[in-house]
Amino acid sequence: MTPMMGAAEVRAAVASRQLSAVEVCREALDRIAALDPGLNAFRTTTAERALARAAALDARDDLHALPLAGVPIAIKDNICTKGVETTAGSRILEGYRPPYDATVVARLEAAGAIVVGKTNCDEFAMGSSTENSAYGPTRHPRALDRTPGGSSGGSAAAVAAGMVPLALGSDTGGSIRQPAGFCGITGFKPTYGRVSRYGLLAFASSLDQIGPMARDVTDAALTFKVLAGHDPRDSTSIADRAPDAVRHAGLDGLKVGVPRHLLDGPGVESDVLAAFDVAVGAMQTAGATIVEIALPHASHGVPVYYILATAEASANLARYDGVRFGSRADDAGSLDEMYARTRGERFGPEVKRRIVLGTYVLSAGYYDAYYRKAQQVRTLLGRDYAHAFGQVDVITCPTSPTTAFPLGARTADPLQMYLSDVFTVGANLAGLPAVSVPCGVSSSQLPIGLQFIGPAMADTLVLDVAGAFERAAPWNGAA
Amino acid sequence: MPDSLPRAEVERVARLARLALTDDEANLFARQLADILGYVEQVQAIDTTGIAPTSHPHITGTVQRADVVEASLDRDTALASAPAADHAAGFFKVPRVLGS
Image (cartoon, each protein chain N blue to C red):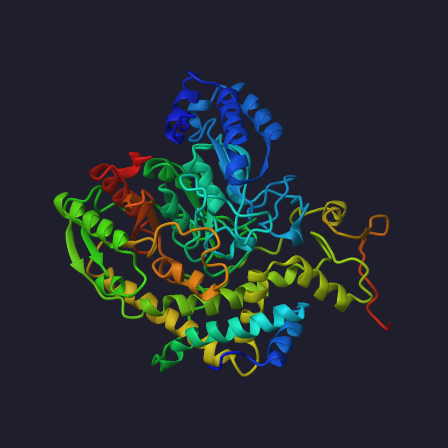
């Protein structure tokens, strides 16, 4: 099967009526039916709802006004879709059909996108390999014995395999960018607050952000414009304002910061370092100035992240108590027993581990030493970035220290799994926009991702720079 | 940090989180949490004297809205997702709360 057309191409064909939205939708559903049994990227497909919406779209006469007219999209299973099962990869939500749509889903559909299904993910987005899903791991489209990354691994695999041109992911510590890098696609985490979290099943509320996963930067940027905007239903949503000024449409004259000191640590694969150096060379050739920068607290990003994210998760996941939604343990003799057994029996091991860790760091006697301390280091890390952006326009580094690892390689050692987030957690802790784009392949032909991180609200700049890099070094076609 | 947290410590925290753990899970978590805490403890060596904590990036104040009643989920819809409910009376149902 040839890969599906990109989102911008589909939209142009549908808007000009070279293709009908129904034809495009059927094609996506056929590809999912043919390819997904080997990959397990999808939890649910929504053929009936999708075809009905596509037919309604074809009957409209304003398709040119819709930026995503007829574009099939897959939605990560931790984002609410009205009447469509939404489990976040957890047994505790088996059978849960939300009574409302997330704001992002409503915005996508208003823009003409067609939701064709829900994608597999690590349970409540906690993981870096999609192996923590209660519904089985997703496989890497180019190497079936490897993980596509995570937690948005289903979305990444669905786009990389050409089943859909677009997918939504969520990114708390790298969960959009890392699987995008592993799978050779583009994944964008916007500035914290630019995209509404209403209807996103909360993991760590001060870090979570929804964003697009796409075949190229053009499609990711097109989707971001649809997703972004103020939402009164999310109190952390940033008020709308004029689009950010673009200081550089390209690489020529751009100042690019490289935190070289972060790359020297152990665990960064030589193929990743080599591809990164080639990428930086390509930026220089295209006229960028490379500036070595220091982010003195960035090496503490992973510990700060795992204290704060688990603390927030332990509070957020208190709502899964077997009372208002989801499923419940049978035959409990008391309310307390029902709570404890429902949660004990229906959360998976990683979620339980994080709830225990998060409860521990928040509990009396440990709060100041762990939680408050981590919040203070978070402030210092934010200052490091602010200082760096006084010197440079964007920062670049690899997305992950390794390429896609084999299924099962890290499941026995949670700490080892956490360390795969070393280059991605900083943007979440500081609330910055960051994108992963392909920058080559390893000696075993596995994709390598490159990250661009920008100042807060410079989402457009980050996407423009990533687009210029993609044009200067078009590895995207390596598939 | 020792190789393992005391089992009682894991059980205490799990009780706070209303989380029933099996023996195997409690033993495994005691070891793994000691590992993870041993790693994250590095933050304690950083000088943070006088540094304000960050709870959210870019948040400058509490958002308020006008105190106006708006449409929300009706009762039947809210009860429809519950594992057990008395739809006629309009209640979520739970096991007994008092006594045994």
